[in-house]
Every structure is written in C-alpha cells, then in structure tokens.
Length: 248
Length: 179
Image (cartoon, rainbow over all chains, first blue to last red; front, side, top):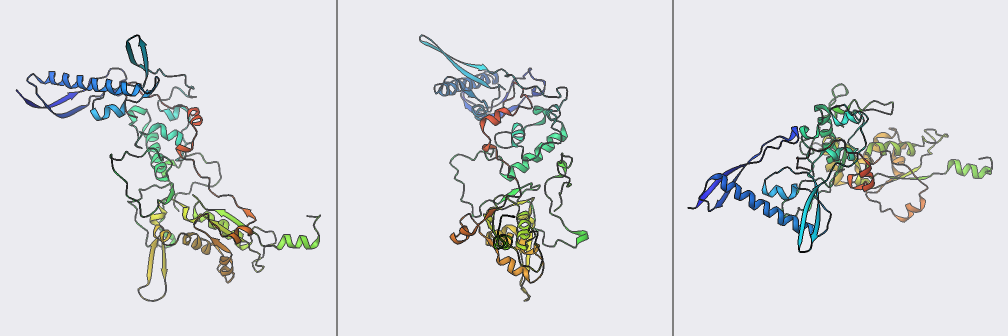
C-alpha cells in the first residue's frame, strides 16, 4: 500500500548544554512506499540521512587526513540537526579496513579573562565601553557566516551589550568592513552590473534605502540634523577632550 | 635659517608650495578644512589676509570620499539661478554621480573667507576624481599632507596571526551547530 506520508520529525532533546535544550519540529512531504506506521518511516529517513552523511564525509576526507568539517553546510539541506560540535577527521588503515573517525576537538588552552566571574563575555574581558564599529576582530566572533547576529542565549551576552554589538555589526556591514559575511546568493544567480558604484560610508545609523533627503533643514534653532553614529555608544571611552558629536 | 643668504631666505619664505592630499575614504568636510587653511596661507607665520600668500592644493581620488552617517542620502545641495522654476535640489549621491569633484569644491568654497580673494584661492585648488594626475602638476608637487581620518581595516586585511592572537571571548556550547 502506497502512502504519501506527511511526517513530523522531532529532533532529540540534547541534555548536554542547558542553554541549547530546544526541540525543533520540521515537516517534510516524503513520497515513500510505506505500509507501516509513522515511527518506522521516520527511522528509514534518519537511516538514509546517516548514510548520506557518511558518504559526504568520506568524499571530503579522501582529500586530506586532517580537516575541520563544520557540520552546518552538510546538515542544513537535510534540515536535521543532531547538534554536533566541530570535529576533525582521522583516517586509520588496518590492512583492508579503513576507519574514518570524527574526533571531537577539545577546547585548546585559552588565555584567562581578567574578570572570570561575570556573566557577560564583554564584562569578563572588561571591554564594556571600549569597542567600536572598527573592532572587526571582536565583532566577527558574534556573527554568523552570512552576517547575522548569533542569538543571545548562545553567546551569553547581556541585553545591553548584545544590542550595542548588533548596532556596531550593522555599522561595520554598512561601512564594508565585513566583506566575507554576505548572505549566500542562490546558485547560478549572476548579480546585475550596478549602475552606480557603491558609495563609501561609515558610522551609518539608518539603512541606506530607508532614509529620505532633508530638503528643508530649517532655521538654526530648529535645524533638522543629520545623525551620525548611535547614541547607544555614547558612554564609550574617549581619549580626546572633544565630546562625541552625533548630530551633524 | 641663518645659513641662508638674504635672497634664498626671501625665496623660501614667499614661494608658493604645492600640496597633495589623497581623499580616499576621507570625509569631504575634513579635507575641505585642511584645503581652506592652506589656500588662505593661514599655516604660515607671515599670514595677512591681503598678502595673497596662499599655496596650491591638489586633491586626488575625490570620487572615493566617504561621508559619515547617512549624509549621502540626507544632505541636499540646493541652487537657484534666479529665473522662475529653476530651483534645483540634489542629494549628495546624485551630485556626486553627476560630478565627482563637486562636493569637495562646494565644501572648500563655503569654508574660504567670503571676499574677492575667494575666487583666486579656488583657482589654486585642483581637484581630480582619480589618482591620475597630469604631468605638469606632478612636477610641481612639493609635499603630501597626512589624511585626517584613520581608515579602519577590513576583516580580510587582518593576517591569520593577528586573528589567532585575538582571544575567543565566549565558548560555543558543544551541541550548537550554527556558525
């Protein structure tokens, strides 16, 4: 009996890290000849996913012995998230059998933060009011590969610092300081040649498309000012006697 | 200098120098203020408004200036020829597309003293949209001025050693897959 099953696959609840205990429900339309119950069909799909994974891993490992394989790119198209960390591939040959193993990379020796008892990573390293949109090495630790921010429950940032970092990341993107963190274009898509070359900018608060020209600036006492930077960063450390100039 | 002869000292004091500024990734207002100081001659101890001791300033790469904030979209340049219906308003982006040197030219014009010497000072300002300069100007250049704004480095301009030297602020949980 053929069944076109609409199934819900629940990912396992991970008991390791307290913050990452989420369940994701994905729905798939799978055309399969199934005459048994839903659980069997789910098991079949998981099996096929695992074999697909193994084949992909073996293809990659044949290129070299030690490689870091981030799991996101392979698993995203399957939609299944076993939530694995970074591993490096170890290939062992015992005569006719080759064992390809993914060894979990343990956390290497890291420098200790000066304030280890704080809850937020910025406060742990005493960077509270000291970073700006130009500190790309710091900002790149909190962004995804396509430029978006990582969730607060994962990074452990407090609310205020998370918003400040998000603002700085936005300004860095608009200034063109993060050229490799663009969202991926669909395959085969050739970007159109742009009519205007991109204009250089920095400390942009608002998005380029949303801003309207100020046709009437007004008199001196009620002038419509052009805003530069962001007021969230007004408490940043200043090494010059001049105050922060936000309304130009 | 005490070792100079009188004629050599006279030449050194009153000769007109040619300065070069690269405006790449610089705010046009800061470039214009540096230019106006040099064009008036205010950087010389022998300054007098009537003396006409300003120097020449050559600005290159005016096409690649960088405005702070959203000024490309918000700043509006207005002009009126006096005839009815000729009130034109252009945003900075439109003005820059039409003429890449216009923004700095207008900025310097507004910063110079509002008298008859302004036009002669503007004649001594030379603007070039790219870094291609004509030979006769290249031969005249004496000094390059430092850029007012420090250009921030992009992420791909950092070497791998610098990136490794920067510590990881937070450890990702073992079972989180996104990155």
